[in-house]
Image (cartoon, rainbow, N blue to C red):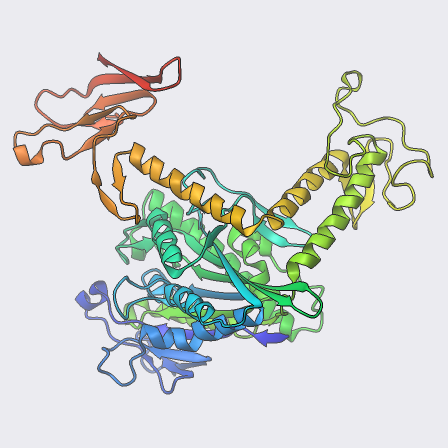
Amino acid sequence: MAASVKVAVRVRPFNSRETSRDAKCVIQMQGSSTCECIWNPKQPKEAAKNFSFDYSYWSHSTEDDPAFTSQRQVYLDIGEEMLLHAFEGYNVCIFAYGQTGAGKSYTMMGKQEPGQQGIIPQMCEDLFKRTSENTDPDLSYSVEVSYMEIYCERVRDLLNPKSKGALRVREHPIMGPYVEDLSKLAVTSYADIRDLMDAGNKARTVAATNMNETSSRSHAVFTIVFTQRRRDQLTSLDTEKVSKVSLVDLAGSERADSSGAKGVRLKEGANINKSLTTLGKVISALAEMQNSKRRKSEFIPYRDSVLTWILKENLGGNSRTAMIAALSPADINYEETLSTLRYADRAKQIRCNAVINEDPNARLIRELKEEVNRLRDLLLSQGLINNNRMGVTLMPADPASNGAPPTSAPVPGEGPASESDPASLDGHGQLEEFQGEMITNEEAVERLKETEKIMAELNETWEEKLRKTESIRLERESILAEMGVSIKEDGGTVGVFSPKGTPHLVNLNEDPLMSECLLYYIKEGVTRVGQKDVDIKLSGQFIKEQHCVFYSYINQNGEGKRCACVRE
């Protein structure tokens, strides 16, 4: 079902920076569906520019103002509607856009205070409230969540403490773009989601700039996979509806001269602006495609940025999508605000063809099995795997051929895949056409492994997912305990203690109240201590620039660490 992207704009109050500079408001709103006008403070005689959107929220004044829009009202208008679409079986996406410090994170996440929660926590709470009211014995629900950030065009898992490096973004011919090895954690209550959300927010990359003290330096994507299972008593068949809810908090666009970004902050801002520029190009191309007759010939630059690649389905595919444009009403931010309004005006022209995801797992597993069978027959014909239908066993490489594929092609009519598989080999081991593309033997083996890995994840039981979630929680607590952070059973932090398994220094101070307040961890390998170009920086009358070096290594039995100190 084709539907346009819903677009809302929200005007925030002046911040301290704008108040100190005696900023003037340049935006007026009339009605709940019209952003009436914005005028240029440098050209007062110029006519005001008018824009119209699905929703316009005036949060510039106080709650005493009848026109003031609260966090709850924003959720009821946008979040609740999207949650109802998720219950219907549609994929859903809500993303917030605007310049840095415009109020995007506040609208999406909010604060942990009564009446200050954003769309994401309110939607999660409402989701479990509605599922708990279910009285149908044949209907059951399950919820999984994942939380990632895109920092400098690299994807990082915010919920898995073992995930250190950047995750790969891949695109499957059936599933579309996805993040490989991104953890999906099973949750059974709103409290579980709240704890995971809090852990992810603490791991997210933020920094202070001149325009925002807690500026988001990365794009955050919080995903909820909501599954509804219904048992048909007449046919004894189970049907499923799986909805993917993507809630996106984009990093703010910024200008280096306004934000005062230098060094690392400048590099971060450049990557943020690059991805947002690509997002703008995608939105413009999709908007033009709706007004053009040559729809299929238009090129959409999804892969120019990791952000647009991941959000490919949400922007122009199978999804019900809503955009919230956060605005600053100050005259000193006129150009950025006008750019955001134009951005939102283009977005409302996009139409997404959302469909109800009726029993997608069964259909997906069937298609994946068909692909596995085609790939296995193709590889069997080349002698690269054993003829074992219960699993894939790669044949060892022939030393004489240095790992090269067999030189003799199978005789037509005798190979296992000669009748069913149209693909064949040329003289250089290059497979001919497979599903409309040319792939080599190595690529076929890699795709076979990838598809079977996806099938294993789809066939994972709910109990296995709960056990996996519990094991990750225990790993997180063990890592914190090793660092000296004590955790209660309910997840609350008790305090800091001297860690047993990690070598460390404890500070001494002439003031007894300041002693033992700092812990300096000695990393594995070499740790330099001193005042200049060192790992642990100390100050004092008798501390040298290169004071000493600690050497830390694991014992031969692997049970503990030993540490030695050498004076420079």
